[in-house]
Length: 316
Length: 278
Image (cartoon, rainbow over all chains, first blue to last red; front, top):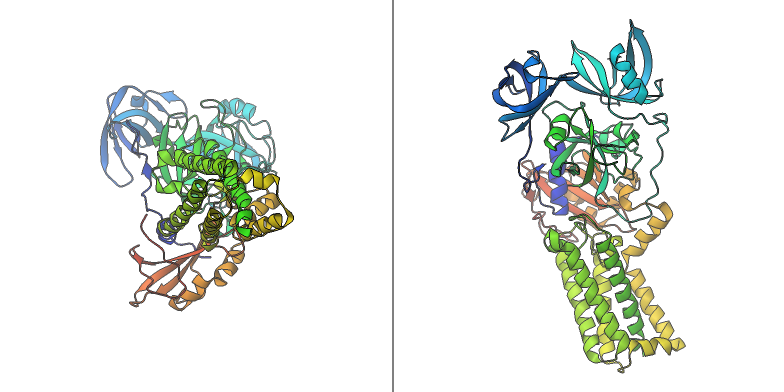
């Protein structure tokens, strides 16, 4: 079936069912909204940062005295290198920098093969039909920290880490989860839904770099395979309702108390296979139910280096 | 005799409705979760659970009155309650064609159809019939039930069961152990149901092609989009929405132009009017 535009689906569904056509965006009843600003770092001083956004605009932001930056490790904002791709959590209508992540990437996939390159290891991962295969480097210095959270460091098992992009190569730095103990093809079935329909489901929200840095949207595992052109979709260890690309999803960060309505823009076929728990503010009751773009994750109050937050989702 | 025998049937329906509503409203911790159950959707979000509980309290009061006394006031009130329910469901179907009636809580999630409306109409008639029946309390009727009374009551229950889409959904849940939103459903099956529906036959001549250009599933609905032409011969998308539960599922249709604005389908025979307003 040819798949057209995500926006068009939303309009057509609203017309057929007589629903109101609400634009996706943050819930308005919450003050002090975070704004995510992305771009290439042009210049930085201890108090000011100048970036070029993907649209080509130059943005000058004030760095708050408490602001910190991350590029493989915590650094002072003024030490970030020129040319780094940054994502900034900004306050006060996007003018004041609260936190900066530079060249950050999320490496989520299935281990295909493991090789060695000096003391470092190279790992080939399968990241779903959309992202395909990618090869990453596990530096020797980070391997202990990663291996202790990935005890099954062998082909066929899931891998999830946060790293930095350096010279076009993704280097893993931090484990993003405790690795599930099963093979990626042996995801436990969700518990049978004896009860009725749950219109709000609690679980883990993570972020993914399957989106562009500045894109706002979510990836969801429970899509019909024929609708999403994704042969790995429709698998989840949580009983989730079917939605489609183009549906909207209300995502609430339970830890930070922020809510936003996001369009489903990608297939979360890897997220559905992680029955892990998020320990951000108490243990999440279920595994991964949604993957967010980095921008949406930051705007909902998430910390990219922690990798997840406890979320409650419902159809938009 | 047949009229008074429907009194226990009304009591059973009122008790089931009240219990199911309390169960649904209490089991719902998150505001907004009743967003797909009517008629609570007609009130603002924060009052939805309260509206459902008030409705359940009304049913419980009527039930207590019918059981404890034979006074015609309770019978009139029951008839009025069901008559009002019929009007509310009619209005719900017009304003929000995607939501369920909520008559038995969240198991009544299927969109309001002619069967649900037929059921409240039959209940109104049953309640009105009891007004002129002998003034005996429902309890004394239940304890001293004769065989002819029991047969008449069973007949009433069969009619109501035939008009209850909830029974199919409950049977499917027992069989699959999952609500409709979580059950896999092949698109071909939904397409078959669409093509067997009167809505399809009424709009078929507007379609420029017999094959859908897009199809997707959202919760318990599957959508099919066909290229078509409106009555004024402008190109439009004809979008059908098919409910995925039940033997004769609800089918909705809308015509949307290239700019995303709904277009009036015109006065087509057999079509179900769809309001594009929210």
